[in-house]
Image (cartoon, rainbow over all chains, first blue to last red; front, side):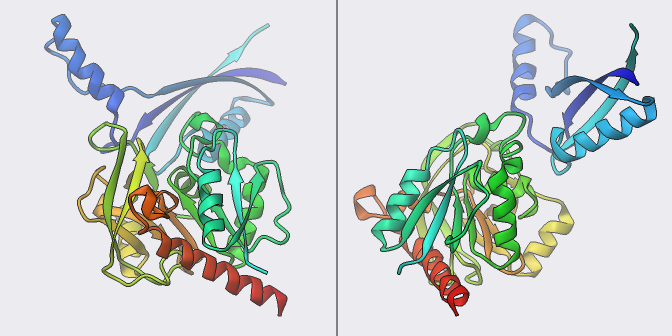
Length: 86
Length: 229
């Protein structure tokens, strides 16, 4: 069995309100960053999963996203996997 | 014997005693169902009350839906038993897939705690059977994530099947189509953001929630009689 670190980026679907992103976007110009738009604050979830191979690990993490980690009605997710060596 | 309403209590639930008080004041019986319980024997209807179940960690209602009690609640719902989710309970029922859609953050990005006017749209539900379509009820809301959202297909379905149970007269939170509450196709599962239990006595400023709770008690009594026969 190999160990894979999964980084899951959960973001709002287009059109879903993001108060944190909106607030940060309003705060940045106060620091002089007047050229910033489209600020979005999502969630980053990390976990380590043991699996036969990367494909199996990805399938399982995708299932976790569908069942718990993200709500498909309002959120999108993106998974990146890297094998942990040693 | 009066019908028994089971009120689900997750860690972080905070409206269970208010619901219990309101139910008992109207002559019903109520008992608290801890989230680890499986056994709903003797329970004729379930209320998933407001609060912050499991701290609302990850998303509102996301963890609560996996509580052991929710499996039994889903079974009761599938068997036609009355199930009502209030506020956080509505969020839990959506996460559990017992109702479609989701509740996102309020459009004004503010936590809202105020009394609002609601128009009864559908009386074909366990929560509104004793109300009249078009009735306006004044009932408090108390939420940050009460802005109902769903796909255009789901909205068309809800509208086409008379499944929007209540609408806000003056939309406070940006909810799609002014939706304050919806029901499943059979009408035995209802979710709403406003708190009828907080409008259950004139002393509280409004007793407009009584007609909703009476409807629920009537549905519970009907189910109790059905199971006894």
